[in-house]
Image 1 (cartoon, helix red, strand yellow):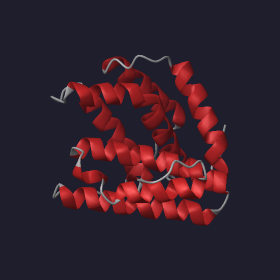
Image 2 (cartoon, rainbow, N blue to C red):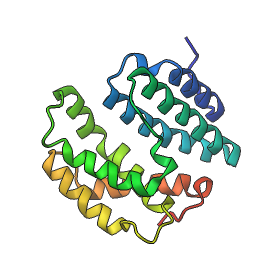
Image 3 (spheres, one colour):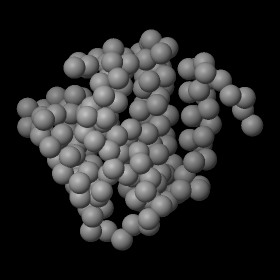
Length: 181
């Protein structure tokens, strides 16, 4: 058992250790959500460390996590950040599908409770990182997210999501080379 630390480098080590075995105890969908969340956390830690090497380390760790999860479940799984333009569409479509799919209540409770911390910043980052002219704008993504939140009964106001998002972007925009506002 590793000691608790607030040092960003130590915390990245803990994430790397967790990623070496996380896929063994989660469903495929849970593992994918966990990888989205861990990347967001990793980017915050990289920003605290203030260097590009830390961001590259986060991307490499998470990419290996996707490979391990795909191998474990014998499914083709690509890191969504390899193609943020396509991932933007895919993630929105997947979130919309939750209304129609027979997913466990614990999984849906997790999705609802973590929506503002996982999906709002992930989709904002994908919007910023997608360099194609043929992409959703953040305004278009925001409208879709609000519709999805109503459809899957996420119990949080958009203003709360916006405040969380702006705080997150202020922390990571430098290490990701994106605009924070």
